[in-house]
Length: 155
Image (cartoon, rainbow, N blue to C red; front, top):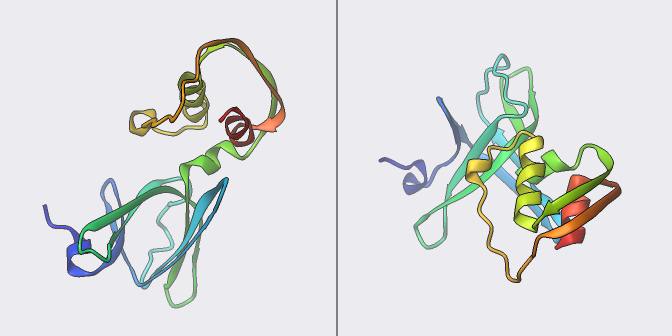
């Protein structure tokens, strides 16, 4: 399969969609979801991209392909058709609503999977690489915190 990254190009890819990008500005902060601003030279303003899962594919310094998966949180098209997209970590889906609830008989992975699924994340793509054991607990309290804060606290 041909990869745009092998040609030195930067692009966003998703089901039935490939957008070539000309600019990338990526921000990461410890404990917060990443945010990437991606500029597309020509973007159809009729495309409904908000909330859509896409992959940012770009060439790595060693010549291999790097991929960042995320969700489009914002889109803007100027009068000349130049588009600016905000690609965020899927974890932002967990950052919207505060909850006060009691979770029963779950381990960390099961709880994280339930929270991501509730937020609309395609759970088939979740992979867990846990450094320590997180046993099933009889209960866990989520007290006036959003789902992302709750998961960060449990880690």
